[in-house]
Length: 108
Length: 108
DNA sequence: GTAGTATGCCTCGTTACACGAGGTATTGGA
DNA sequence: TCCAATACCTCGTGTAACGAGGCATACTAC
Image 1 (spheres, each protein chain N blue to C red):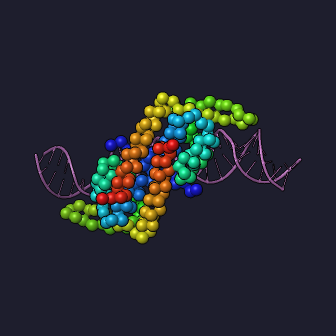
Image 2: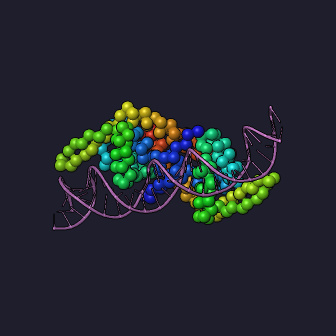
Image 3: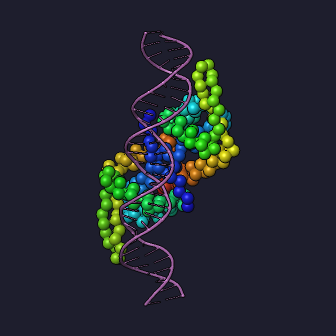
């Protein structure tokens, strides 16, 4: 699936935070969840997902917790209160932008 | 109005092409039209608009035509066939992305 | 046994682009 | 005479998506 950098900006963070607001998840699981929840419309490459997660951790939006399951190391991420606020901001922005684009595209 | 770079990527080009697909317009006019058509949701700064127009001209999506009106020089832009194809692609991408985001946000 | 696929994490370099700040110039109204 | 609106432009900065590459383990099929 051809991703379009120039239309995806900010979206990965929004999607990840939204998924984590429902439950703790690990990276690989998040990748799958994004594909499924967007009905294959969006797929986050690992070169996008992992750096995004690290950045969000640095900024205090998520908290990481390593855990080994059947010989494999997973890094589980949980959303923080700060991350929840961020999610609120981002989804507000998204609604504003998406609403504006839709208004213009459908033009009166 | 605080613009959010990380959610706007690719959007300016899409909006401008869509407006030009209805009629020829000049830069300043486009800026106003974007604000109005998006119901003040989106405002393209000149540092975004003009470089975007130049890039689109270079890529053959629009054609520029200078015209002096009452002592002021305006640069009118018209969409090209190539630009129309580009518009089709971009709006398809947008629908895909926006649909995916909406599906995930509203999630079950 | 061993080859291939799925799981699971990571980083680096490139490219693209939004944005603010700054610059120039003319017109017209207070 | 000053200031807002019109109308164009560029440069530098910062952010972020993306592909390609790398590492390692588990499981399944041949």
